[in-house]
Amino acid sequence: MPKIPVTAIIPAGNEAHQIEEAIRSVLWADEILVVVDAACKDDTAARAAAADPRVIVKIHEYGYSAAQKNWAIPQASHPYVFLLDADERVPDDLREEVLALLQVPPEHDAYWIHRRNHFLGHLMKHGGWQTDKVIRLFRRECRYQDLRVHAEIIGYRSVGFLKGCLQHDTFRDWNQYLAKLHQYTTWAAEQDFLDGKRAGFGKVVFRPWGRFIKQYWIRLGFLDGIPGAAAAFLGTYGVFLKYAKVWDLFRKNPSGPASGPSSLP
Image 1: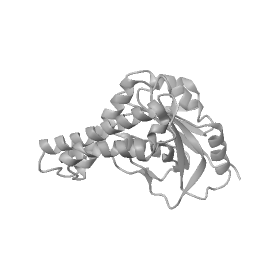
Image 2: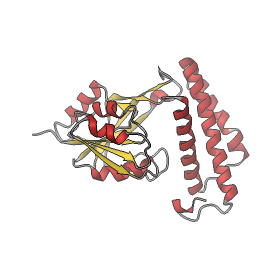
Image 3: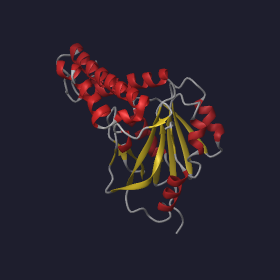
Image 4: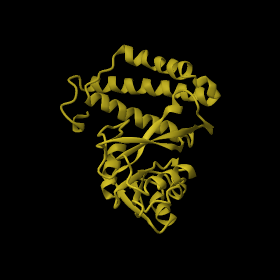
């Protein structure tokens, strides 16, 4: 029986510095689709197109992560999709595991893959980073939840686990990381607003420190040294930003959302 073909999809924004390396890590796929944010300001699209003759580049307006991915998935030509973020890499053992899996009809519609997260040049082994997992191999019929943040694949009948891990480098520089933190906390706040979840004094003031205690002390983040401390403080700041933004959204619109994303003030 011939191998079941798979499409690799790489959503990308301003990723000119790393898009070629991301593409190289999925050259084993039967089709490679790079979906570039229409607002991209660098030459990500040109570098992706030049990386390999098989690369298909599509330009699409970016709303939020799940929306972009849900637009990209139907563009795939093959029955299975392997989705890779531009800051992730597929190591040899994971590549061989995926190819072996596709030699026969896979048992499951979707597969969880653990991530080995690197932050400030350090492999994070504590603080909750070590349990990070994502569904990245799935049937083309599956879609992401329509959430602004923390969306995961749904629509599968059964899900399995792969043994290999994705390599994920979360930090490029401080400007990039803080801009990403700001964007993600904005999306998270908007999602809470749309869900009618308000944020009062307790959430704005005390939730951030609860996050720090959990990540740095209970989950042993301090064992990762300075990167562990930096990650814990940034996580604390992110929780504060999220709830402060939720409070501000309800301050501007006390009655809450009318219905759907268009109700955002």
